[in-house]
Image (cartoon, rainbow, N blue to C red; front, side):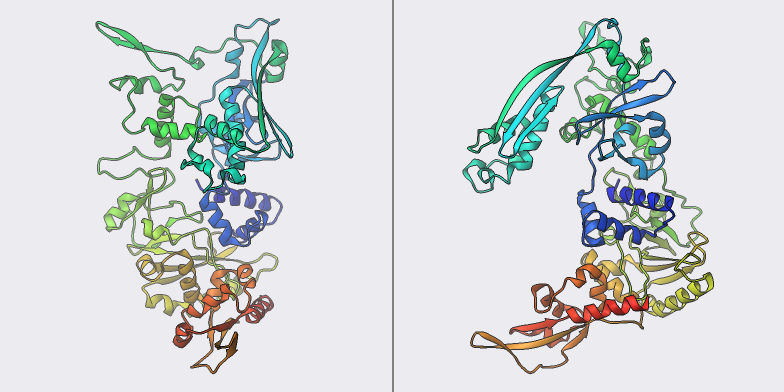
Length: 594
């Protein structure tokens, strides 16, 4: 799941609740500013890099309240403190609304709640059974104190492993800021320090000659049982047998039965029963993958519980891992109806670049290729094609904003489908007829350009609802792959295809120079010195474009743009490119026009 999509869903939900409905591109602009990025391009790049991923909430256990509700006790890893979430909210809201996958904590943090859906959460009450009312519960504490020049960091955890993990995280965060550990120093010793175990990274860090020290100790927290019950809201009762973890055994004649690994998932024992040895791996889910998730903090399950949950997750998300024809599994929200497709427009990816409609059976029937997503499920675009869809867009001078996340099938071919949604009837918008007439006029203007490359322009009235019209621009993926090296170049190509004929333009001016002593002096040009760079500026985005300065490295490369005269591109001497005033005038004209 893409974290940026969830963040945008949350933002749109809040804005809509306050009477401020936003289109997707407007939400992207607001989110970019809120997260501290210069523009949408930087925001989407950060989303792809995983920089927007909130940490996972860590489920501790569930508690049945006397009133009949059940709460899930959760740890906020950033605050290292617990809080509670209503299980009904998890089952009925988090599971159904993508925006709620990320939830705020009482400590002011935003956490990913996926583990509350995916993990099997055991009742906390089980650990309290059999303890007398006058007894106390002893909780071991492992304490670490890091002293440094700014003060002290105190860590208190319930296990030594957890303490090591916290201290190691501190060491890793400081690792390459300390001169002792910078690459090239003797302390490296050729090792990849990022792959060391927690204990080893702690040892190396505090053995190094710098003014930081680690002191560790242990203690025991004794809590009277009545107080603990009161804090957790637990009433004394026996835990049902169905929720108690069990250990099972199986054996063969003449051989002492070997104990099975302890499991909690109800399907795990049956999985183990189908393996020759209880310590063998499941053929589809190797233990190396499980170890990787454990090390990354993605799971706390035992191996066989992890396998059972993976199989269960795959069954819930789509079909069996592979059908009789060898086709990949399909997410449950994707339709795959090859016999009913009549050749019209069918969205293959949605506004979040996720699979929408048209599964492997349909694409197989049409002779089209596809790929797999990160979870091994069907994805309608090939790897080359998927490089040209993204939660991004371009702000055209006429005020339209094509959203570039969509793709579609049309007449049996695959197309990128940048989509413009124009509202009407609301404050600041035109009436339905005026908005539609303007959109149709624009569609007629760009249609010949699209038809020349095998594309199409489609206007849908009153879609996706009765407050908007939609314009869909279909560009064959075959053409894009042949004419654009990457997403940034594709944005420029798209801007050129969709640029309105009327409206403001941006030009660059080239001044050739020659060295006279230590000075660069202007000389006579060999041809035209001014050319149109509107498409490049529009694709770049307003904020980044406004940061361009004359005669700087970031403007020098403009002489290699498509419309630049050949002699300008071939000039071998010093030169000067001027563009700043033209960009300023361009956006002033755009604002005045809007």
